[in-house]
Image 1 (cartoon, rainbow, N blue to C red):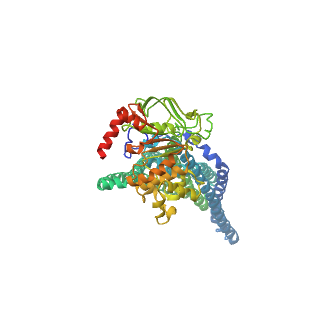
Image 2: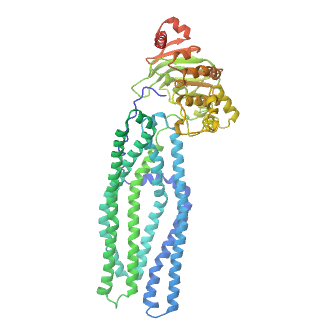
Image 3: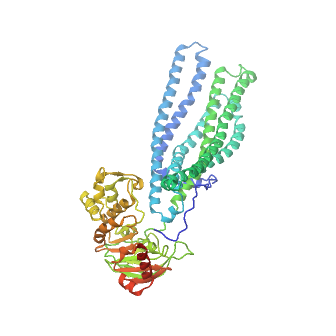
Amino acid sequence: MAENKTPRRNTYNEDEILETPFSFRHLFRAWVYIKRYAKRMVLALFFSALAGISALFAPIIIQKALDIAIPGKNRTMLYELVVLLVGVYVINVIFMAIRSRIMVKVSQSIIYDIRADLFAHLQKLPFQYYDDRPHGKILIRVVNYVNSVSDMLSNGLINVVLESMNLVFIVVFMLAVDVKLSLVVLAGVPFLGLGMSWIKKKQRRAWQMVSNKNSNLNAYLQENIVGARITQIFVREQENADIFKRLSGNCRKTWMEAVKYSTLVWPMIDDIAVLVRAAIFTVGLLVLGPANVTLGTIVAISTYASSFWQPIMNLGNIFNNFINNIAYLERIFETLDEPVTIDDAPGAVEMKPITGEVVFENVTFGYEQDKTVLQNVSFTVKPGESVALVGPTGAGKSTIVNLISRFYDVNSGRVLIDGQDISKVTLHSLRSQMGIMLQDSFIFSGTIEENIRYGKLDASKTEVKEASKVVCADSFISKMPHGYHTEVKERGTLLSQGQKQLISFARTLLSDPRILVLDEATSSIDVQTEKALQQGLNAMLEGRTSFIIAHRLSTIKNCDKIMYIADGGIKECGTHDELMAKKGLYYHLYTAQTSETA
């Protein structure tokens, strides 16, 4: 509906900047979602700690078996140790299963909460927000980014604490078994740190590029699915396929680059782990000797060494995951921080049932600061009057009805309905009393009945059918396979443009608005149907204040008032006969149009 706006650029080739440094500020802000499930997360951490501690007793049990039970041929003790070992692993599995179940629920709950907040906020954002961004990039924030950060906010935070605890416990248990061999294990940490610091830096950049390229591909794919018909009309299949191949190729290339660095991590850790275990046996058997260290001790320390590297590796992965997902979290908060420029003012009151008087008092407005669409426009429309807005494209016709509906706020001046400044009433109480029919009639996926009932969910089937009859929609709906229960796909792909407009008419009529806006509402309806519809339109207009924007001037001859909009203001105003008698702008527009159709 907005006019004089800069068209949205195709931004699917633009990479979002994800080089945001790691900052706990975003995590602190995310605490609002985390604290709702803090008790469950603490419980999950408790079970995780129990599972981790129980597993650490396994090497000690093995040590006792090797050093005492087997050399002493104590079968009873050996059987008891075997049963104890099995029990330790069973307890570990049970506790980890409980922890996993708790965290799955927590993770999904966080996803639900963030998505609910995002969707609620997106519903309130102004038209300009959607005009400036590819819808695919908005979708990837609501779906992909939320999925990524939910695991970080739930499992990630718990795992940081858990892995740190595991590392401490492992070191304590190792030192309790043998201090000297434990120092051999710890000697491998500096080498791991050097390797990880190099890999992680490369890995972070690589995965951020993967996210960028996936976002671009998602935006382009969504745009081309919506515009598939236009693609075929202009025979753009090959060109679009080439662009898609390039974007998809970029995804593959960046993915392989990221995987290249990821695959270096495990081999490096495995190599260090093997060297450390070799060092344990070398130092234990050759340096310290059997007199100072037993075989069971060497095996126990070797087992702890194998476990020692896992939490270090996990902490590295978690930190890397945090670095990447903090950028996603920032994008989510960036969306949530997008200003709702049109909202209820502080102290806004409910607008009472209106009669429909509309007054513009010196209204000035522009979509951009340096471009004014309307300049000091003033007029009064009495309750029940029908007003036609005519004039050249981009003159401000749709802008006027946008301001009445408060889709935008005026730069200066006031818009009043029944004497109330609409900027001081709640949006819901204002818009619920208005009916707006657009040239592009949007149909939602679902049944035809659900689409008609969209603005009045409690409407009965009889009311739906009666509204459809008034606007001449019942005749074609009744002939459909399942009548009013016929399923229509997204954007009403099974319906003609004219049928979609008639369904939109029925939807608008059913909502029983006090002020009616028809913005090129009959543009896709054939002349014969429009003539049949005229009686229904008259019924819709009866007793309602209405604003009609139409390029077919023959349809507005009977309006109470016609306003010619041009150059930021109202150039002419009067009835059809009055304006024709003036032989001014409206006269020339009308005669030019009638001569073309003669």
